[in-house]
Length: 147
Image (cartoon, rainbow, N blue to C red; front, side, top):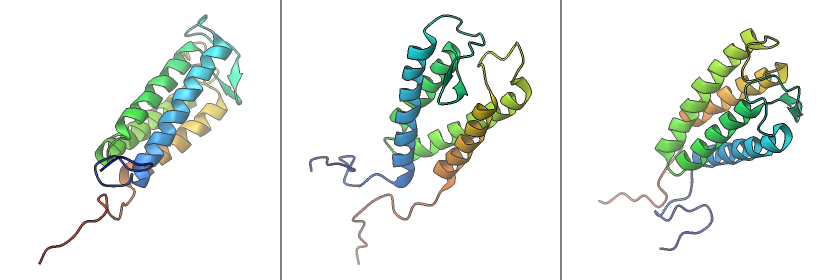
């Protein structure tokens, strides 16, 4: 059976957690790459004052976005992987939110965060929980019971 759009080639369509993990992976990868066009590779851990869509960024922040994004692209291939990615987002961005509450405006903030980042981080953590814990009716299409 040939793989088609939305089909993994294993006889089933992607579940919504897989699709959401794939979408977040693609978005975060793209944001990380675009971020380097704004920040360049100077002042990697410094406050740059440079923003992308209102979010303050620096080189390290871009690297984190790329790593999180690539993880989503890789883990979205299976439901178990997508659920793992959801936990990664929930725990990682939950921690980033707490870090941001303490670090915003401080000289030692190596991610160069601002209040907009904190809002995005808590929302991403919630999406991660949805991916990790959200119900899926059937991960396998065409499941049959034999009498």
